[in-house]
Image 1 (cartoon, rainbow, N blue to C red):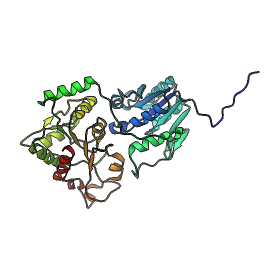
Image 2: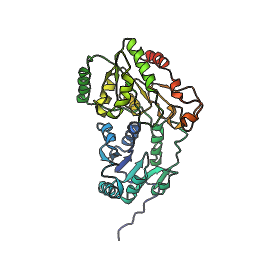
Image 3: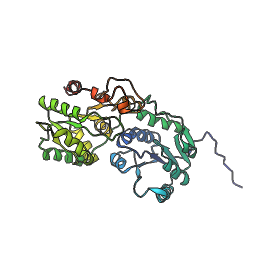
Image 4: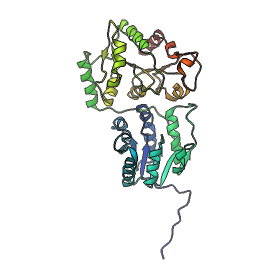
Amino acid sequence: MGEVRVMSLAEPRKRERILVVRADRVGDIILTIPVFWNLRENFPKSTIAALVAPHGREILRLEESVDEFIVYERAGKHSGLRGLLLLTRELRKNKFDCVLFIQPEGKLALASYLARIQERIGTLYRPYSLLFTKKHAQHKSPSLKHEMEYSLDILRELGMTPRSGAPAIRLSDEEIENANSLKREIGLEESSKPIVVHPGSSGSSGRWPVSRFRELVDLIISDGKEVVVSGNCEELPLLEEMIEPMKEKPLSIVGRTDLRTLAAFYSLSKLVVSNSTGVVHLSAAVGTPTAAVFSPVISSSPTRWRPIGKRHKVFLPDVPECKKCTEEKCVYFDCMEKVLAQDVFRDIRDMIA
């Protein structure tokens, strides 16, 4: 009769195939990149996969620590009950040993449970936390530390002591050439390094008024600097509102880039000025100095969402922090107007000097 081997509870689980789940916004995906670096360092022979939204795959496309992708189409093929069953089959087919929910989502947690992934790691304090085999006690709402640090903390449930590091996005030569080609199309020399202004926002944080962006662009142009405005097609009305009254108009790449080309364009720029939104992290991740205007709402604070690195700057209205913007009911409304264009201009002149 053969020997029966009993596995000790102290023995590590098999983690040959690890799945990282982060299917939310652009900035969130970028801030998760160090999670993949840490996993690769600690599990060099394992296959590391990412379950992300379509834009997440674009961001991580050249990331060497990611071996495989599952693209989660929330409003497409993975919507509804049929989508849940399809996703469950995809996960089961991939035979993952471990799944890490950096940003949990009930439907994705259920799919991993139904797919019988042995080790399911997520956060505590959620109705569906019972679907996880390990639960990390974590409250993000007080915003006591950076989102990247919150993400890395999940790795402690694997017995790791994660190392921090500024997220970085690798760009191909072709992507850099596409950005240079776009510069030529809008009338810039390849050697020029413009200041890019991004007045749009995903809506997750208070927005600096368009009028303030207009004043800032006027000041930059008057100082003899080249200014380019970036944004997507949906933000075109907002940008037209900003640019239309201006005598000297900035150049524009609005609606003319995909995510990777935009990152490459930022990498060829001197500075990016933006609301607190995903492009802040996109710019920082390609090594470009970034200035971001934040709202005083605690969940959107610079403590949690500032661009990572030493060459960046954040601006906040001089008002008390608040839990939620109550707009006209607040005695400080609209506090975002308290961030003055001349103050931002003074500080970014120091940044680009």
